[in-house]
Image (tube, rainbow, N blue to C red):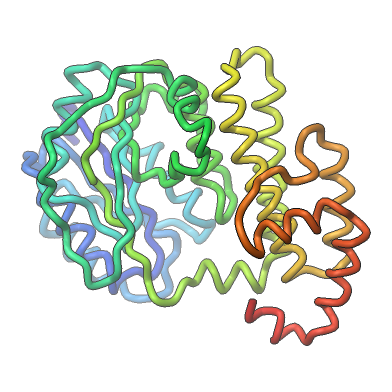
Length: 341
């Protein structure tokens, strides 16, 4: 394999034969010589046909297909990191697509500025959407640390976005700091992002819409979340603990602005944990999380303020006895009915 490879694109793959072609076509339409970048598809034990993927790998010298036993998308991404040859890493999912003819200018920018990470924009689209050429001038922000970048979102912590496909990341940074994708579901990208932003020294933001996140009509993740929420709840609790560790770690030297942002992420995670446990878990689970959250300084009661029913729910969950009583009343409904919410 050529040592001139600049970029490794890593795609975790599982039974995505119906969508992978659009992603691969968009990745191949980047104005880059094929000997300068590689597309690594890590099949996480698909049970359906992989003919489309194999056909692309046979046709294009820069597309590589690897198969492994099923262990989840995080495991597949970590495998991709291990075998990647590029100086830069880019993660994307098999059922989305990227902006054509964008990588060439982006790579030139990050090389010229010697960045650790470049943050790009993204857009949520419907399955029949197509890429739209960007008319606004290409603009790069000032170079800053990841911690300083965090501080820009003090008033709207969720505006930062959480998809790993927003980032071009220097592989050297990931290797040096031992950053890996944790084997979680639903919030693994948020922890990966946190780990990166706490260590990168040279980050910039580009105003280019690089990634198109396709919102499919049926969400397997959403359905599984309802059915297996006990498992999801443990993952969100782990995320809350990681955020709390970052806030209390004095060695990180976080600014007050960055601390506010991480606290905002934690607050939203606590709200999600309590509201979804209320809906999908036994009452005992809700009582358990209320108890352990109370012992984790600064996490409870929830501080986030929203309008309408969300604000009412926040106020109610701040009173343990009231929240447990409401939970018991809600659980009088049959499980099938509760899963509709």
